[in-house]
Image (cartoon, rainbow, N blue to C red; front, side, top):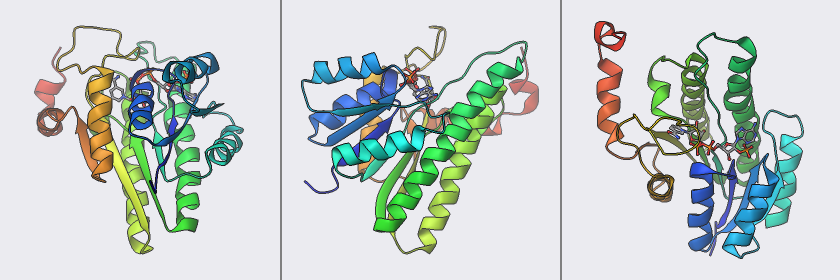
Length: 238
Ligand SMILES: NC(=O)c1ccc[n+]([C@@H]2O[C@H](COP(=O)([O-])OP(=O)(O)OC[C@H]3O[C@@H](n4cnc5c(N)ncnc54)[C@H](OP(=O)(O)O)[C@@H]3O)[C@@H](O)[C@H]2O)c1
């Protein structure tokens, strides 16, 4: 199989872990990253495969060197899914906490996305997928999180713009999940919550179709249209 080398940034848990399972099952050569190395070891043992992994903190300068090591380990890269992300409800707006969100979701994302774009540009082909969020569409109760996801979606569109000018086969996919039942959502009082497996399956299909945008699950497209136009007097209501 050609174009079969996928790297998933942030695959120790949740959506990223399920994506790793799917790509492995579909016969891809899979490389995964995360800070919790013991969970990557466990994933490898569970899948009983030669899945490759490297420890990586996207906020550290070492992240790109780690990514280069992983690319070497799996013999190249055709597709990268930048799934790593974090976010907090931070009622006191503690600067250090807001900064963690921005360094992970903005600076970390940027470092990986830039490297990947330049890598694919040299080959004139490749596919970058960013895991943004429905939260990208408006400000919300976790200001740094929503703003960081807006950065991701907007930046991906910029990369798509640049790719279109270069007559290269570089595809860019912006994934916007709604609620997915992972450690990131520590409340059950939310609606339309998908299992990580269902979300990952829909993400896999959207990537296969080289979609520019996808809401996960699909019904979130409808919620997103309402969310965008909801007047402030309703949106800001307690
Ligand atoms: N769950 C939802 O409802 C939801 C909705 C919309 C969007 N999303 C997005 O989906 C993506 C996956 O989240 P999830 O819900 O599956 O939650 P999760 O289980 O907490 O997964 C987050 C992943 O990101 C990695 N990560 C976090 N900080 C990192 C760092 N500094 N360096 C490297 N990797 C880092 C984590 O690995 P380590 O901790 O091992 O490093 C983990 O693998 C995130 O981008 C999130 O914003 C989630």
